[in-house]
Every structure is written in structure tokens, then in C-alpha cells.
Image (cartoon, rainbow, N blue to C red; front, side, top):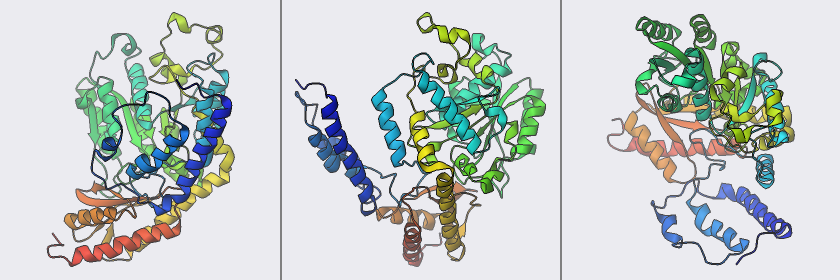
Length: 482
């Protein structure tokens, strides 16, 4: 029987594992961005079960090379431009490694005081870095917490909003009236999922029209929807506004939306999952004007701020409402520190009971890069996106499909949907780059999202040259204008 890995064996194996990761990063640019093997290829290459006796770490690392890496979509690749970035960095990996090595359970302050206190301070640091409203700081009535994703943040905000909208009855009696959630037609799918999990059902989500040019929520349409529901005897519970929508990075007008929510007493949650990171740069904080109206706000450092998944930063203006909505305290969790009321127990700020020491990786990133290093990263992405957009705009075969305030560029071929879809398929099939698509005003649209710290001007230029060359071949074919 294999023995437990002692500290010295771990030290040796750990060096080998770190070397493997470093070699992987160093060779990413030479790898195809995506695997083109058929479904089931990896599963067919694996044995039918584990070995009876232990295997050495060298065998595991060798199988990473031969089995795992060739079947990955390489999200850290410098030419990965799909979806939104989900980027990692050396300091984040090290922080995660130490978190795993400590193996603490941070559900209560008492179960690991440093796990809680570091998270509280780091979220206050981050609030300062983004210049968030003072009401979100732990030194006042609010505070921050790390969720696994913006989806969880939206769910937690929805539950707190229901608690408020019901006057506290929701906690005991559940959904006893028709409550409503509101978001734009560009809002993230997690808003619908949160409403379903919370018991509102799909019918409880009001989809609000957007401006056809900016694709941002129309405040007049929001007011009209809320008034109609009030007239019908329904209870407006939560509005989810977005800074940087998934399709195009549209920015909902928070000052107008916030004023409506304040007037009518509706919880305002602001989802800035991708674009929130931009606010580390003073010149991009215009996107957050009106945030002082928000009851809760979140963004994902695991998207554009160099911190590995999973790490969503979520703040509330009044932590007492969140805690009242979610707290459950069985006898086995009673402890002296909690009973003093002087500590934060983050189990009351999320859906699960248990929690990892996620703050370590964020702390490592903030300290390693510093404020100016993080700003440089964001500015680089914006500049590279601007450079790509200028190439698109200068080529009459292409058209920009939406504004590009951050590091996402949405574009299409003017020849139509079929040509645009064919272009994306052929470009991705080369393995040299990876882009994704959406629809803007019903038209097939390609998305190029810049975010990797490995991405340089050369990678963006190569992506454009590839798109331009393949577009020429697509457009020469009969029926390309269909």
C-alpha cells in the first residue's frame, strides 16, 4: 500500500509539478489553442479504473503531457480570444497552492480567524482600488465577500432582495406572493437561473427593452414594467443592471435606473462580472457612475484581474439584511466569538456552509502586481482591442457591431450571417486562434476578447491577418453574400 506523502516527498513532487506548469506556460504559444479530436477521445485512452497500488508522481505528470494537455482548450493561450478572459497568473497559482496546503475551513471566524479577517481586509482594499462607494466598506454598514462566481452573487442578492421585499416573511413562509425580478434583454443567463432557484420561476423575470444603438437597458421601459406589476398587485423585488454585458459589454445607465429603484424601493444589484476590473483605472470609472444607488455589486477578479477561477468579489451596502436572510445556526456551530457579535461569519453571506481560503490568491495578486501593475494590465487589453477595432473599421468587408469600451470587439462581415459564421468556423479550425460569437440585433457577430497577460500586439495582429485572409477566401466563394 502506498504510504502518505510526507513533507519531503511532497517537496520533491511539488517542485516537479511547478516545473510542469512553468513549462506548460512557456510552450503555450506553440500549441493549438483548441483540440480537434472527437468527443470521447480522452475517455477512450484512460484505463477502466484506478491501479491497485500507488503510482509515482512522474507517471501522473507524464500522463498530463500525453493525455490531458492535448485535449484541452487552452484558456491561458495568448491567442485565446473567446468568451471573456478567465486568466491566471503566477502569484494567483501560488496563493491557491498555499490555500490548498493550509486546508482550512473558513465557514466561521472561529474556525480560522485569519481566513475571515484577511478576506474582509482584501475586499476593502479592492473596494478602494475600484473607488466603490463608501457604503460597501466593512468599516460602515456594508462589506465584501468572495463568492465562487457572479452567478452565486446574483442568487444571493436575489435572496436578500426577497427578504427585504417581503418584510422578512420570506425567510419563514417562503414565496407567498408574486415577486418580480427585472433585467435587460442583454442580462446574463444567471439572472434567470437565480430567479428559478429562488422560486420566482421564469415568469417572474421581466425582460426590459434596450436602446437599439447602445444595447443598454431603457430606464423608461423599466419604470413602465415596474408600474404595471405594481398595478397588478405584484411585488417588484430586484433589478439587475449590468456594467459590461456578456454579448457586447453594453453598460446600463445606473444613475437613471438607480433613481427609479430608490423611488420605488426595489433592490438594485449591479453585475459587473467582466468589466468591473476596468474600474482600477481612473479613466474607465465613468462606466460605474451611479453605483452609489446599488444595494449590491459584484465583479470577477477571475476574469480580467489575473486571479484564478473561482473568485467573485461581492459587496452589499447593508450586511445585516444579507445575514438576516441567510443565517442558520445549528447547535454545533455555536461558539463564543459568534455570540459576541464582534466577528464576521461568512457562512451567513453565501449559499454553502463551507468555504475555501480564496482570499489568499487575491491577496497575492494585489501585492505582487500592485495598483500600477494591475492598471497596466487593464490598459494593455483596452489598447490592443482598440488596435484590432481600428483594423476592422478600416476594412469595408467588415463592420463593427457594437461599441467597444473595454477589451471586447464585436464585428461581422457585411456580406451577412452565413459568411460571418463560415469565417469563424474556418478561423477556429486553424487552431491558431479561438474566437466565439453572439447575435447583435439578430445578426451573427464575432467576438474577440483580449485579456491574457501573455497576449501581445503580435498576437492581435496575427488574429487580424488570419481573419482578413480567410475572409477573402470566404467572400470569393459563390453565394457568399447570402
